[in-house]
Image (cartoon, rainbow, N blue to C red):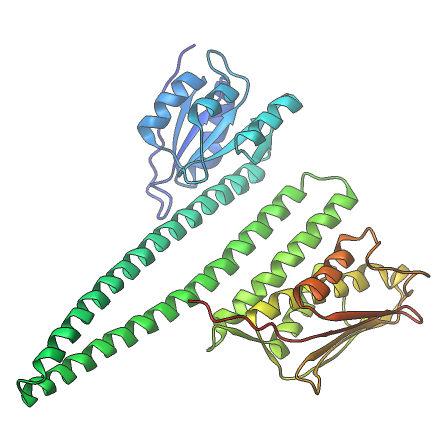
Length: 409
């Protein structure tokens, strides 16, 4: 069958260098994709079979491939097998599915493909999936570039330190010759210390940027989960997706607070917990006028190694109360307290006045992933204890101490 190259050149800032390769044996599908993506400023190339697609791929080096599985000469699966994409490749793949078998879908997953678009596709689904796929690849490429730059900086710093040591030894030997040379060495040493201090300040800025980018990447993953959830009809699966998004948001808030903090190693929980609770209420479309929020959070700062599991514990228990404690829209009270104990530990209390816990409740045997996760985080990670009360509502009393690790080198 006839193959051809077609490129749409549009001078739209930020997208004119993004190349998209469309592989489909139906010209009407190719034209539809071009029509919907043309205004976004992408350069679009097309082919009608996998063999021609491989040649085009090596020529134009696209960032995104939109691929139909059923094509003559070489189908989509053979194309992917020949391409052998890896996570480090600059290209991402969206598979168009119309009547593909489960075996074809499984083979796509085995080849590293996780983005699918069903025919006939919706224009906004197409644009959204293309935008997110390209953005995710661009973020990954930017991170790799930053890591390479950081490695280069560290190598230069090691070389500098090596030469600095040579200079120190040389100047030390010359100290016996002249007091004037000693003064010169002191001045040079001070200049070197100023450069090192400047380098440390630059690394602090870089670390802040890393926290900012980690937060943004977690938000991208959450957005992808939200996009994927639109294809799910199962209420149970949708709840699992929402729980995963809330856990991602819990960790993203940690990095957001670290980015905003003057000290990049500790989290102020009196500021973090209200932000987390506000997000959870919004996530479940609830208002504090319906479920009253009673909080008492001391001005406590916790290291990041302790803050992450503690934040996940709060997320799981508060989510559990908001979902199951108050049936049929009944008003209630949700309480969250965090205080410092006399033995330099912490007491975290989370409770509600809802339907309570069932008789014989055992957190180690429940099927709920959230409660099993809470028990594992408290006992195994924080090395703390957790007590449960189920009369007149549910109440969880958690005691733990801040984790102490040797300083990283």
